[in-house]
Image 1 (cartoon, rainbow, N blue to C red):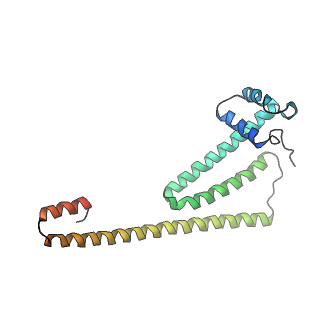
Image 2 (image 1 turned 60 degrees about the horizontal axis):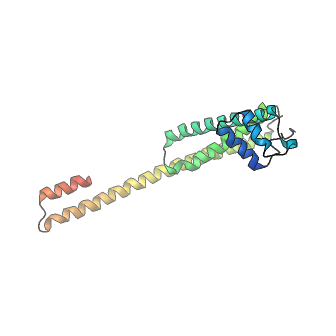
Length: 185
């Protein structure tokens, strides 16, 4: 088992501050200088330890950005509507779990998939695929309902417009202009 680093042992607020300082573009030395005023000397990480932490966070951030970009590309092919948020969330959660597994391997941890773990992973993959299919079916059905509703509304508007000429003061030209403005032929 890997021993937690000094940074992992810091309070969450201090770890968040390290992340914020890094996002603001501060160097490792600048961050260390700020930490001197925030934590006792015995809790302060070494320069090398802070460097390893920042490098690890940068690698994980890069992986997450890559997963989000991949999900965006995939979702772009499926549609950008709010209906696909569930599928995107499931895909990102699965990607994150696989990245964590891969990260453990890269850090030298012994990671082995036992048969039951492989079965669980395959079930998760199947469930994600089923959720994505159900989501796509929902989007298709919603679009069909919207098209039917649009056609019904257009038919209702056309019927109302057809009744207008019987009233006084409406010329066929005015009626044609109204129909054109509403997109009804």
